[in-house]
Length: 105
Image 1 (tube, rainbow, N blue to C red):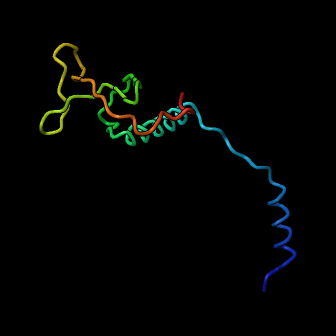
Image 2 (cartoon, rainbow, N blue to C red):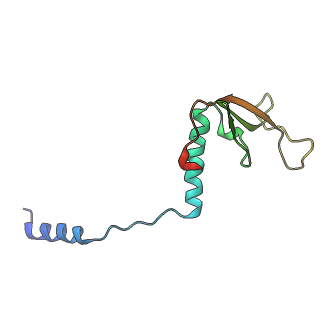
Image 3 (spheres, helix red, strand yellow):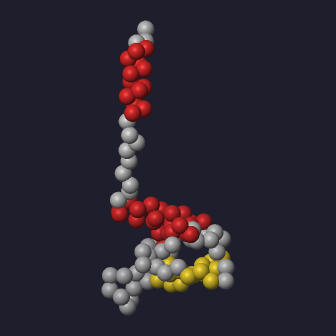
């Protein structure tokens, strides 16, 4: 048998509890922004794993241009011959299929 009085008191107590939440911290905000950016990159036909963290995205005349890492036939990144501890990069241009999300600017 259900104790209706106890059940009612529990419902009332739960209703009086303030809504509590914490906003995302700086690292979490960066992670959320990165996830959204990766979704956008994939939607435009690029692999986010091929785009360096410091890459500059250029959108012009319906095209997206960005640096991507160069990979060998086995899929490994090719070391840069001019910059120590870096990988070789090249620019690639693809049609802009999905516009850049305004909330990420």
